Structures are given as C-alpha cells and as structure tokens.
Length: 259
Image (cartoon, rainbow, N blue to C red; front, top):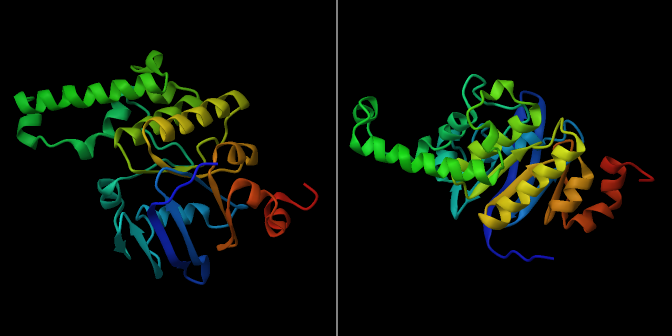
C-alpha cells in the first residue's frame, strides 16, 4: 500500500444548501498529494456537488477549502483552473464540431501568453507559442493512444473515445489536481479497462493527484488509494478500499446488505 503524507487539498466543514434542500452537511476530508481518491455513494449523495465546490462552481454557505496551503471560501472555476485544478464532467462537455486535436488544444488556453494582436496576425511570438503548445498536445494524443482520431470531429466519435478526448483536454492544462466526474459512465468493459489504465498512468507518470466519482465498485477497489463515502450529503466513511469495503454502515447504505 502506498503512503501519502502531504495534504494537497482539505475540505473543512463544508455545508451547501439549495433553498430547503441540503446537498452537503458538514463534510470534511483531505486529498493527499499523489494519491487517487474515489468519492462514492448512492445517487443524490452529494458527490458531484462536492466536486463543484472544490472547483468553484458552487459556493458553500459554510466551511473552507484549503488548496496548496491557501484557504478560500469562494472561487470561480477560472481561478481554480488557473491555480491547478482541472475537471471532467458526467456528460461529455466537448466542442462537437471541432477535431480531437483542437479540443485538446483548448485545454492550453490558460498557458498561452500571446496578446490578442499578435495572435490575430499570427506574429512571431504567437506562432512559436502555438508550435510549443501543439507539441504538448501531440504528446497527450500519443499518451492516450488516439493518434488515429486526431483530426476527426469529436461529434463523430463513439462515447468511450469522447471521454478519452475530454481527459486529454483536462491533462492539457497540466493540473496538480484532476477531478473526474464518473469517467467510466456508459462504457463497456473494455473501455472501462482502458480508462482505468490511463487514470493510473496519469497518476504514475505525471504525478497528478486524482479525485474521482465512480459507481463501479470493482473499478474503485482496483484503482483507488483511498475512498470517501457520502450518503444523503453526509460523510459516511473515509479509508482504504479494504476498510470501506468492510465497513458495515457502507455495506448497508451503499453496497447493500449481503453483498
């Protein structure tokens, strides 16, 4: 079992409500630098709401997020991305008419420094910068083994490959923390195996810290270093996959009694 000592992000007493509906209640946990953390729970448990709080899409009424030592109550998604948090979504959010390469290039936007004038006329600095960014994108395409679809409009791709392109776009931002919201939803077994391998390779080769939401318990147990369980907006458990798998409350609330 791998050990992780440095805290990259901490969630402290986060509560989030939409009117009378409590999405999250007094949630606290840590994400350690270099680990793969799974957030699991039944539908409506608050998993996606938690990711939305971390990347600034939702602003909690109570609690504090600390990322790389900096405490914050509120942050916009742009600021979260600029500070090193990237995100994929339950439903693929790609530019369907654009090619695989161009979609992944959009993940480099925050890394680009050329001004609008030089970019518009494709002057020297802008041209050199685009060549550099394109080289990074080509490396990601090779890493994800999608060379054959680099010029294909993503709207023509099967769902599993669209998910892989979305992962590539997130990687293009070179994040310190990668948030994956159900990265294997709707995939067949072979596609899940491929995505699991890529997630582990991202963690191993790039050193990227990963927090993911996933319903497939086989996947969770195989690729996670630690698991946080939510149920009705509250934290039910936090531990290694084996600890969570054998937790009676988790068995009753999520896995089902007798499984």
